[in-house]
Length: 141
Length: 431
Ligand SMILES: Nc1ncnc2c1ncn2[C@@H]1O[C@H](COP(=O)(O)OP(=O)(O)O)[C@@H](O)[C@H]1O
Ligand code: SF4
Ligand SMILES: [Mg+2]
Image (cartoon, rainbow over all chains, first blue to last red):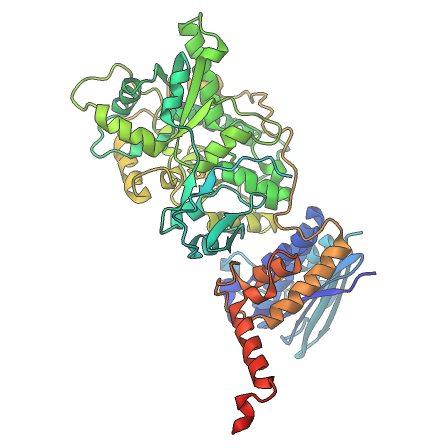
């Protein structure tokens, strides 16, 4: 049994330029642990999508990454507007992104579906007006 | 144990231990020990950032001396396209090629020709169904090594073609043997005139199980000095350039990519930009791109540390020289279409994460926890006086047993203050 590891990142909702940095940093740490590159890729894609969503839909939040004996856990929480209809949001191509955000190449509506695809477990808890917490697991053993 | 031969080394007598190189190393491969920089061979990718930034010129690239070609009967110069950008008021590439013959080479074969062949192949490779995209160029050896060490997921994106220098060397030897059937392999020396130590390392080490066919690599700056004395601008040259615009343009960032006549390309230069592009490709964040050209050096190979001219001035010169050049060499069509059986990416080098903590994940996690705890206790100002590039790297070194905690003078100062303050009879209690 090994101790659980935790990395915490602040995802700044005001600073669009640094969106995606947490995912790069997680990759570095996982590489150093010796996690398989395929697994690292899944984690970083899921993390990247979640991070971007927090910036474009929820004015930022926090990302916690846990590593235990068998899996990597990602918990993304924000105090944004919340998601009204989660099953709709999970549909490929569904997006409420504004035109400005789309002009930057975001808002394809593939973020949540990709997070689901690249992880072994995903749970969304969301309250309108209070925020959203998304938990994902990627098994590595 | 790594048997990789690097081409960056240190002149300890010039090194003042100033920490500049350590701060610029993209893989955190440098530490300062006893006022002297040391490079960790496992982490070094030969990008030459340390050579570029050393204010004391203590970091050197190791290459062969031009005099070594004398050991061979038939000496073929393989000039990198960037060589043509080093001279002021050069009207024609021919003058440089003639100069190479005049400094003692028996023959010259432009690497730009190899580059044009690679461009032709790449165009048809991109049309192959089922290949992994974006296709990554392997021409800059730093990139090929970086992908293997740090972005293994992208290894199948590397183009399975030999780099231009290998194609040029191969054709040069074939041509030489046609002209002089009496030549044996051991009589012939193919000598690459290199803008960078990375190519020197590549020629010594090969890539994975592929061994380079080039005999030796000399520095562009050494050859430049020799050329200056012999180049004649008023006498017609006996040799003439065979490569065209496409080949010459490979010296600059964007040259390789633009030769593909395809808009879905990315061309990036400078090691930090390159790493950021690779990170984004790995995250699946770049879509609809067919080809990515990456150059470790700013501006592309014209920015190599063994090139003399400022890369921006060099680019301007290339634009001028190539103005009246044909697009490519003659008969390039014969190379298009078929993918050569190069074996270049068949046996790739092993994936080695640059700074893996241990072979056992549980043990790595234990160490990482210690590193995180220690980071919290360190001042976090990344001053470098401990000999590590930042506080986090220092914590790693301490946890791995490679550095002593007290090497952090800031933390040590606080420790001493504390000690004095708590010393029985210390002044603190006096008033
Ligand atoms: N953290 C979040 N807070 C509020 N709404 C969100 C959040 N994440 C996703 N959404 C909603 O779910 C929709 C679908 O998300 P996603 O699949 O990532 O597509 P996209 O981000 O391209 O719009 C978004 O358009 C948005 O309405
Ligand atoms: S960009 Fe060119 S000069 Fe620089 S390291 Fe790569 S191959 Fe060498
Ligand atoms: Mg999204």
